[in-house]
Length: 129
Image 1 (cartoon, rainbow, N blue to C red):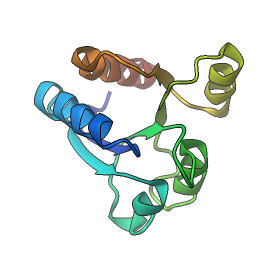
Image 2 (spheres, rainbow, N blue to C red):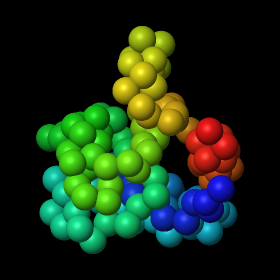
Image 3 (cartoon, rainbow, N blue to C red):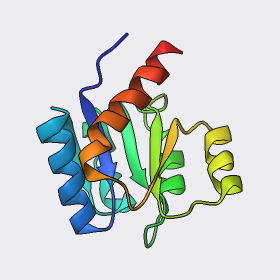
């Protein structure tokens, strides 16, 4: 089972980016690379080395779902799993993303103090198969 170390986080909300980075780096000891938009994340995709994508679903311009589709086309990133963060809570919406291959959906607002443990649990479940 591989240890999760590198996370790519994309969210248009600066406050959420700041809190997420603090929680994941300080508590979880993860390396977190962040971008404010999907377009920014795709500017130099060959430099991305994430083991997990943590993507906001609803962003202006490119949605998290579209970004995930585009990242899957990048060599070496096609098999990287995704976790979406969203305020949408409809069961059909969540089920559709899970059926598309998302590991999990984290509902906003989320408990910042629990985020690192939540990501670790999602990763461990993924790695266990």
